[in-house]
Image 1 (tube, rainbow, N blue to C red):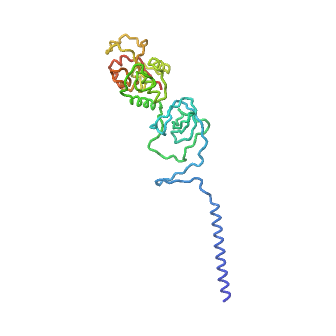
Image 2 (cartoon, rainbow, N blue to C red):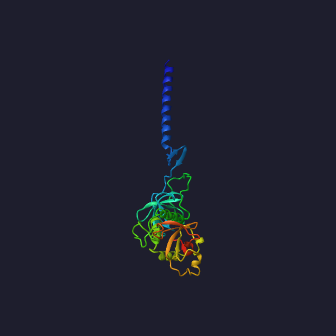
Length: 294
């Protein structure tokens, strides 16, 4: 009887010892297990891992070609200002493959195209994006491959907001209550593209020639180009026969819209800022040359 009792006691003691040993072993394994270095987030059943090693120090960059700084990483974002060639900016982050978030020397923060034609990061490496996995979007959210085109549309859009603004020869350049032709052109380019043109049409014409963009044929012009005209001599082409356009004085300027149309202002009676068709009209015969200022 005593032997049976002793055996039962020994078996219970062995079981307790085995349980304790197992618990100690499992606890040691749990302590030694590696902790995941990258927390994960799940949204709509899709898992994304975040890059914990993204660079924290801001890098600098140099603007290679004039480009818009916008308030959003999209061409639909409002233009904060136009960054000039050679200007230095700090890159705060690479928002995605097509946009940098930057800060300029004036303290403005916005987004610019990451295209190397417009911006060059100083140093060997590019800033990291916020995540190691890029999230696909339906729109590319990238600036125009031709930023000039974007600026042109901004200029024209601004000009259209002034349709009907009264004409005044020698209008006050400090307000928008009235315009003459050169004041109107100067204002919309400065407001929307950050380009300050000379004050009168003849100087604006010289500006275009100095840029080397002057074209003598309307068919060669692009949307947003300036158009320069000589004084009125009659409504028919024959009225301008024998006129040496190389020596004629510029008396008027407007913005070419394409499809034979011009956005301009030229008289009180015409109703101020307006859009006119120039094909087959005196405007076509009066045309001297035109070209881009962007």
